[in-house]
Image 1 (cartoon, helix red, strand yellow):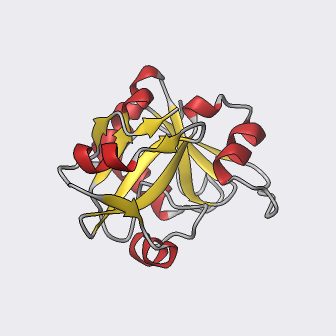
Image 2 (tube, rainbow, N blue to C red):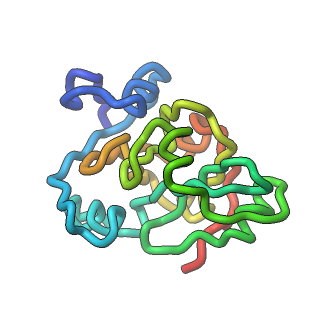
Length: 166
């Protein structure tokens, strides 16, 4: 995996800037986003020719009224009860999309777990550990970043736990 600088990635996003600043090895993958695609994550996996189990979506939930980031495979659903337990909470619901966008600084479908405006508690599904690299949004639709799951967990301060339902 080669590290891409802001210039190499065709204009940095807060996510790629954060990765570069941290000295983390990563690869940027761009694809033509189709606004009519029914699922951003599935579209990314298909466009990049990557197993959907290695492409992770970034979801924002509210755990006991605190916004929390969940990173799960696009081929799975978020288990809200497991997310709440993973971060020491009691109850989780999906966050209001406008609140998620405002807090992270990214638009829906392009929310990256990296370089968010405000660092939120984060949980990464344990299945990520079974892959040498995973892909997550690089901060805009049509742009993914590939990195080691351990680096993703370290940079986001994520707890790694089984939070996905397959």
